[in-house]
Length: 374
Image 1 (spheres, rainbow, N blue to C red):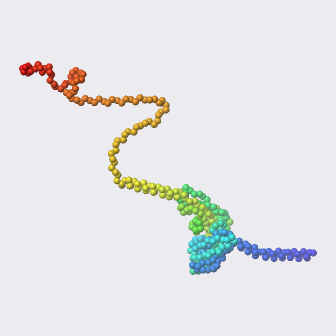
Image 2 (image 1 turned 180 degrees about the vertical axis):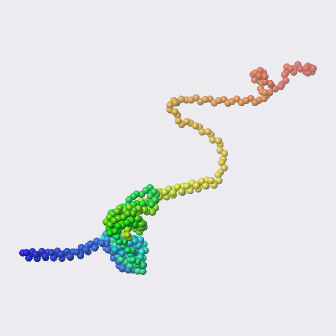
Image 3 (image 1 turned 180 degrees about the horizontal axis):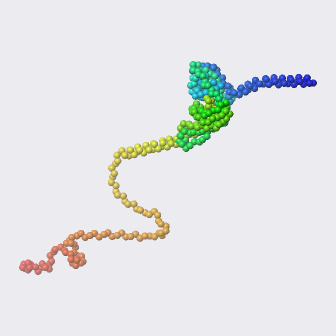
């Protein structure tokens, strides 16, 4: 019985080992199938031609960007970022339900020398990328810059943008934020005063890179919290992407939605209303000053307005007020000469007023002249 058991045990071990050896390649194939793959129809072509780029293992229904980049290898990636790529001749493609795609890409000279690759990266969603070696015929070739030995930094936490817009940003002032993240030194030497590159990109355009130096020392195996200022141009609005790069490698990307400066819009609306109104009033004033004026006709004197009290004090009882009689007109002075005044009125003799000369009949009959005549 003992030899039979030993033989049975050895048989079971051999079967298990054989099964493990058979399943090992399939497991490696499944793991490799999870990684995105890029294939080219040709490994070399001249400018003016085109190649077919196909791929598999990507997320279904995902938008991808296809670029021809210089100074890049599949191992080190695109050292200069998208500034080393022929962005104007790039193409976009969407994967199917199985994560596959196929797209024609024109061959153009990238701004950086070769070695070159066809760089495929996701434009939306989780970040994924893959490179395929390609040679542009007639394009210059230069060796890649040497990698710095010693310290290497890696982002250990998610990046975030701290800060908020001020009042002046509503009127077009440059919006600013602070990029905050935590890095760790995974190398064998300390990193002192590292210089990061912060890029801002609007939509699908290539980022604009600015150097930001962080003051401090990160020992091997240590970590540090880094804060770098980020600022956009005046009047910027829309969807932006902030990228962080160190040592020629992009470490992180952070989306940034910038609101529209409505104060600028309000200013232009008011300007379009106020300026035409002011010009119209100035023009009317000039026309009123230049045009001839008609002669003013003589107008009769306006009658004085009759003022009627509109408020009656309620504390005074209502009563009829007697209207005073109009005053008699003032007597006009007598301008008649004294010798022409009337003497028929009473008391004329007593007032001593003289009358006009006349002949008295009583004295005329007894006058001497008349006696002689008789």
